[in-house]
Length: 162
Image (cartoon, rainbow, N blue to C red; front, side):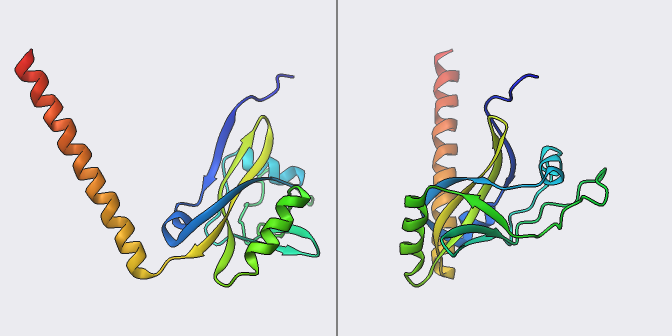
């Protein structure tokens, strides 16, 4: 059997990047059942309402929706069950220390397969205020307009030269 190589993206949480100011990111493994892995390989998952928390020195991923596997039988999994995250002890200690601060939460950013193993990218995040979100959108829009102007100027320059 050929081993899977590289990174295959399953799901992304674009809303988290919009709603939160991300401070630090971590890559964590996931403890999954067989039908969950098969559902993920079919490319189905949602991270929108997901978050992580530390309980009894262990990291748990909550509210992430992995739908039931269509060919699954009575062994199928619950779509929103808590899933254990696999992190190093020092990473868990760092997460505990940071989440004790007010306004800091742990959100999943992306779910993917890396060399055949399911991984989730989580981040320490601080909620943005409405004006912060507007500021970010304005910066993004002005950068896009500047890039368009530069590329248009390059096209005009090429047409004059050629």
